Length: 328
Image 1 (tube, helix red, strand yellow):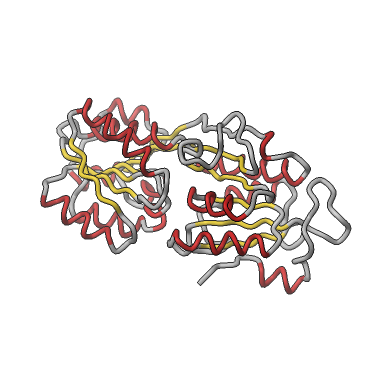
Image 2: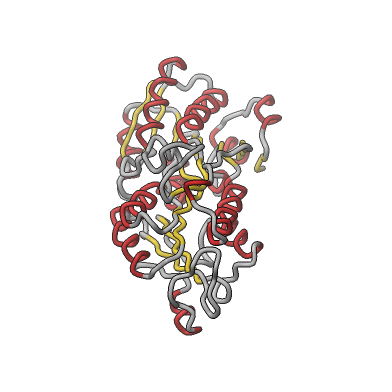
């Protein structure tokens, strides 16, 4: 089922009208934003609140000064082309995308509607934009530096448990950002004397099989790459990690809050708020091609000490001192 967070309310208010002309809103017309995401949920139930709050802070109130259509792939990336086509049929004035497959689908569906990325990993490597300084075309927004951060996470995992020599890596190959992360991890693993056991996850049902296969090979740690599937299905993922007593490092603070051992990531809420600024600039007349893609400047290490104790791990004091947050 496709989630259309504000369409019903918008219809009831009579606000789904003709396209908004960037920088010259006609009387009685309000711009339409199409939000394409991998995550199930609604405007009131998702992990992108900082983006929507950023819009509100800039004066964009859903149903009054903007119409937001929340279109979810419900955890199935193959749905994005149909959802992108729906954005075009809705005559969206701007499209916001929270994952790389959504960006590709939107870009394939339209070369004229502006597209704003919310912290997408490796947008140049995956072909979403030509370059960060000169994105070209109709796509711009925020980058999340996925490949380099994956290597940093592996180093942090080794710092917590120096004896780890076999690491289970879960990745979602349907997302183009998976491949560059795996490439960089393989290079780094050789230098760290770590053997990676890489398992492709294409649906949540693949998780138990991946853990079972890896445990038979005596893996001692867990690392997940940056794709949305591991955030959406974090409850199942973290339960399996706890069941097999695997210390893991993940992307996004949500996973540490919900019981993962560690996360190391950019300040995701800050990036989402900055993405709202891109929407504002474009709706006021700026061209995506003229807006450089921004990269994160702040990174956060979160450690769940309660999980460490359950795993029998002692976190090095030096690492605790570097942590931005320690969950007791």
